[in-house]
Length: 350
Ligand code: NAD
Ligand code: DAU
Image (tube, rainbow, N blue to C red; front, side, top):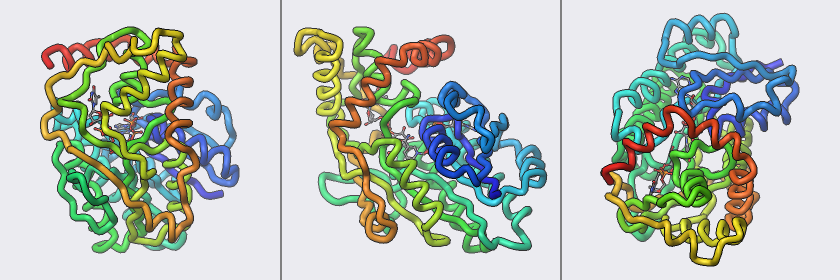
């Protein structure tokens, strides 16, 4: 039985990936290592927590001694690394936290696998999950390919870019068997409501203002989170050693158009007069260093590994809204306590 470590498995994308692997691969032992920060939530995994091939370990990837000890004890065959500080706005308020988790934490994992795999890397794999934000911002033309140069603008994307460089440097310098993927914006169930889609669904439901940064003309390329997890599965099993794959759904939206779609769907689901929710739109001060446009060219992944997104956006956004409306207890739990002071600080002076 192979033992696979998934870091950050209690977060948004991590929980979908853990669920996919635990259910699809009974022959793998899946160990989920997570610090359970504000973004990590074991309630995301209740349906698989009792499975024989699943184990949760609480721990911090920044703690090098703990990580080395864990790796020596467990002798993992592979690592899929998602643990990160992931929210751009928080990286503007507290950049250092992003250096610790995203850069140092990644290097600690690389050092630990160097130690345990030093004699034999046969069949081993370190898979680093990254983001399209490392490529910077596009104008109205073009798309990010695997060859696009790195040009990060936020402390979050700078920390992710740095971790990507370390992963590739450990491949080139120490011969570690690594693979990297860079994905566009994910949406779906279990996403913490600091990110645009779950935040706005929650605010529309509660008749709260919808704080649109700047003019709402920034463009993001949205991918159904379960399609990202499927892409990770394919790349983990079939991706080439040392290679990079871009993942995206060819699904670009300006923020304001996306928000209006959500308003329309929610007016209908909440039986409100058409146009009611759009009145909540409030233009606020722009995000500092706000990237204008992201768009991923995923031709390489589609052609080499045969991956295509399974869900159209119209269906995906409706399913997503239905999930948040049905899971009110989940939403109430994650928005009580610290969330309220985060929200106040983030939005009060915009
Ligand atoms: P998330 O914030 O929902 O989850 C991050 C998880 O990491 C949480 O469970 C948290 O508890 C854990 N974590 C944080 N610091 C830790 C530490 N020091 N030690 C151990 N665990 C720690 O993030 P997400 O949106 O699921 O993103 C997962 C990964 O995918 C990240 O690496 C992110 O950069 C990348 N990514 C995200 C998106 C997106 O749209 N959300 C797109 C592309 C890439
Ligand atoms: O592109 C991949 C990235 O997507 C991931 O690497 C990040 O982890 C993930 O957080 C996401 O980053 P974004 O900054 O694009 O996502 P966010 O949901 O924070 O914002 C999406 C867009 O909506 C962005 O243009 C900013 C805008 N926005 C966001 C919030 C939270 C608003 O207008 N108002 C808001 O309140």
